[in-house]
Amino acid sequence: MAFSALLGACASGGGSGSAAARPDDMGGSRVQTAVLQGMSGSATGVNMVTNTSVNRLVVPAAPDAAFQALAAAYGTLKIPVTDLNQAARTVANQAYRVRRRIGDVPTMRAVDCGGDSGMPNAETYQLTLTIQSRVVAGDAPGTSVIESTVEGTGRNPTTAASSDVRCNSIGGLEKRIGELVKASLAGGK
Image (cartoon, rainbow, N blue to C red; front, side, top):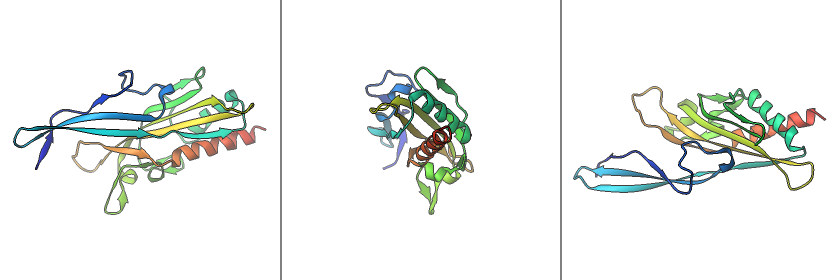
């Protein structure tokens, strides 16, 4: 049975209704509902659940020092910082457009956007990513926790297709951010 989208996805759930996630709302689940209309005119609702995982890394540094190292890591990876809040210790880019590499991280190691003929879409698609990180005080004195999330969409730049595909993090970029933070902190001692 052929279906066509009647209505765009509508966000629902416990959020504040804002399109962009607040930095203190990193991770979690979101439900979107799409209404599809069949050839016979019948409508069907489809719920899609999106899960965003938070990658956490404990570092042996005070939160202010860890925040400086985090901002430097974004610079090293050439991720333009569009949202910086020193008081909340958050760094983000809510609409980072990229193809093939994020700094020294191949996009296929950062996100999974599905694939065709054995080639990951993340390798060839135009990606629009939300990359967010923050620093919170660790449980032990003199430690901090770096929390990062990556999610987004991808679009095939070589076809006339206008639909985006969902891209989920596979952890490679968050891991690299953590490695750069650790290296920066070790170099500063």
